[in-house]
Length: 451
Ligand code: PFF
Image (cartoon, rainbow, N blue to C red; front, side):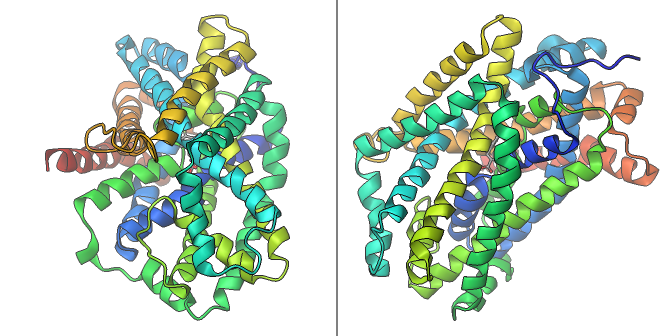
């Protein structure tokens, strides 16, 4: 059988898929979101549940999602139409693609605002604003940023512009280099910070907070948040990984690739959390501070490290790069669809998606100050988009992906595509996709929504 190819191209090197998918997975979700969610949800028990969701649901779903992309060889919307057709099922399965493209747009909106903060912190670090300042003053700087609508919108605009620029040029060129060089550097910087944390007295308190499990602190909200975040952090349930799978060659082993990505992603989150809580406890800060947490803590560490101005500047550049390689994948499903189906030029498609997400992002930015009274289902606009996507759209997308792969697709095709040699591992995976993941997602979502 001749192998089909995506019209958007194929990754040029074997490693590129792993790098691109890791670039998509590792981002603000690991360094910004995971630590503050852990802080808000009381620590160890949340971390444990999150790890269980990653291993038992996230990794199996990732395999299923890539498989759909690699077989469909098109944008998620068109891949799902093709595969539904191949399985002689209803075209409604295309809904997975639509839901995903919309979720990508929504996430990109608030994601770009937060990435804008990271860009602003590059400037703050480089200009030496924090040098010789007290911890209190450093953590207070964040409040000045969020209360200033003009600054928020400017940095959000800058970040969206660099995202659109790469997506417009075809994601391969920019991404391959950026990810090969910058991701490993980010990891090294995190290890430097971990080394610094290990010298601090509050290090053991941080470890205890992150890893000592106390189930009495676990609420139903925390369980849903852990589930939602396991999808968010691995970029699952919205077609990003499916779109990348479409550019993956057939020779590559899926199972080991997916496990590698899952491990790397988890490691980054755990290291970031440990560093951040060391600073929190060492400086009497509040673990449950929310979205400001990373920005209020890490600059304190840099202000105390030798060469902190340079290290801190590099660090925030790398965080920006990590956010950028994730943002690209958020736009890709919608852009790839517009190119394929509407015959649109890639640049125009990227611009339209970017402008739409930019407008939503402006609303998110303003909801942190002048529009803070505007609420949607009891949340400000920023939190509304975050919760709608993380807690509902992504898990729902993941659930539908499992139902499609587990129950609708021809089993021989699934078996041929996943290409797991070991029969027991294959059976465990298929069982997780058929039963455990869909039931797990359904139970957690249903419980929370009904409660
Ligand atoms: N996984 C990214 C992060 O952790 O920052 C965010 C993300 C990217 C979510 C792509 C979803 C997605 F499709």
